[in-house]
Image (cartoon, rainbow, N blue to C red; front, side, top):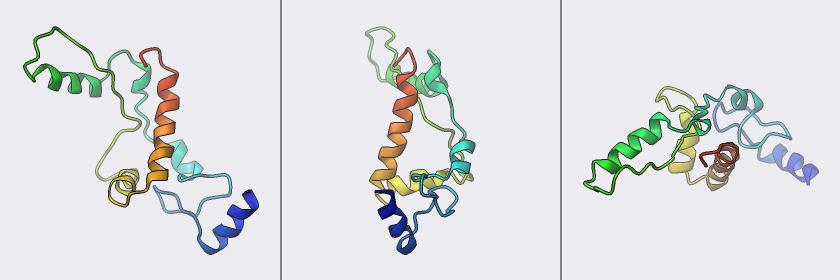
Length: 118
């Protein structure tokens, strides 16, 4: 299977979704450099986090008076408009890059699976 990928890379080279560098044979969607530098939130390891608190604030403002319910939520990485990591969201949202979305979802899911809250 790897030999097929390497032949395909000659004709249609795969590039990193963040920096655009050509991917090595063992890399998928992100190069190792961008993967290592990804600004991860690590919110999955916290019982409460800023994203979930904001989300829960919106829930409580909706007029529901059943007491405090806490919905757990967490982002994978910090988003900054000028960061090259915005390319990941752009590729998924506007170019319909489903495989990249699945890859990022698996990455978030693996981190969340290691947390007690999830």
